[in-house]
Length: 130
Image (cartoon, rainbow, N blue to C red; front, side, top):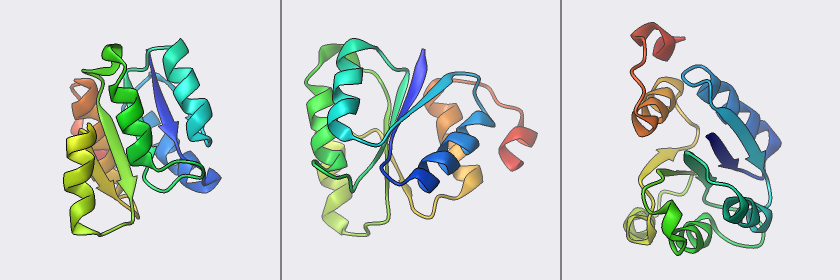
């Protein structure tokens, strides 16, 4: 299976992809458009979703709520990446189906550790530190 990154900023998307590559051999797909990402999720089952909070057309939270309406995504981990520090966001996102959060700018070791944990991989500690 693959990991889907829903991120409209090309630089941020490439950074997330590069960091994920350090801990997984899964295919990593980047989609900047949340609507197209929803269509992709209906046509393909991903092992994990990494979703930016601020997206054009719909928020990351709206995207996650739509995905969680699809039963085959009930157990798929969804990580939201956001620079938003609003206290209510995390609670609303958890209620909407977000598994975990990362704050921008993303800290490399924390990101790789979270990816590894969500995918159930045992990772060499040296890979997390690189």
